[in-house]
Length: 406
Image (cartoon, rainbow, N blue to C red):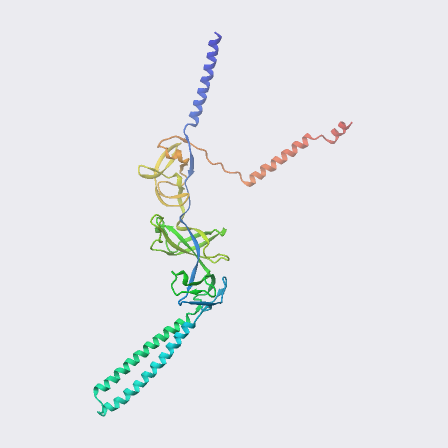
């Protein structure tokens, strides 16, 4: 009998627990999700890319003659004007060649004058019939040949003069001397910028700087001349520089087949003291911007039946809504069609969002508005008053203190 009563009591307790659990499930029934309220805002479409800082105008100054450096007239960091002498090269050979060419021009000029005088005399004799036509034409031909030889000599003199002038190296632009690759006593060879042995030094105009960014091939179509860019330089971590895209390469940078294909994009940036060529930088190029557009969190967008859409909540249940999207950024996507302001949509968690279906019951918690600073101050002040009042009530009066002392 006692065992039977115990079984009835246990069964009753279990039944009560089942009823409570069922009631709770019925009350909260549904998948717990995170939600967002559709609102208007600003969206920026951004292309990010790494790169480095360079001087907008920079010249690697090469030697155009093979000669020994006899005098360096500048040091790294010096400011130089356009046309200022930077380096003096040994001009012994070039000067000798110039002297020979100059002497040759003088000799050929004298020969031409001699033959012209001969032609004048022969012409008088020819008119008088004292010499044959053939004799006259021969001397005329000799004059023409002498004139041609003189012209060649003058060309050679010009070439020798330019070679001599090139032993004095001048700056082609105003700027700062950045690199000096040769020392006095070293021999430089004539060449081009592709020949490191011919580069004497580099002059950069640090007043106008740029960032040379490497933009991936998948994003280069989005970039346009005139786009605004936000640039961060590693050396100035707390500063954001605003620049403008002024050049976009039409051909990719030379890379190995296995490497990603990048295109060069040049962005002009304002002058900043201490900014130097070669510094590492990153940029965010704003390729499109829209204000006051309907937007939703990018993570709320899902694909269903080959359509992009979101799960909208209506009467506590989900409903897939196909949407037409616009530009996107890191966190937001523009919605052109399908939603309106104040619609509530599911925005997470991702695992739950990926497995949602239509007409699925969901639960969520609305975000609570934070109390204003004024309300908090009033509450704190009221608390202090109440606390002081309690202390006063607990403390004995002067009369009570006297009785206690007695």
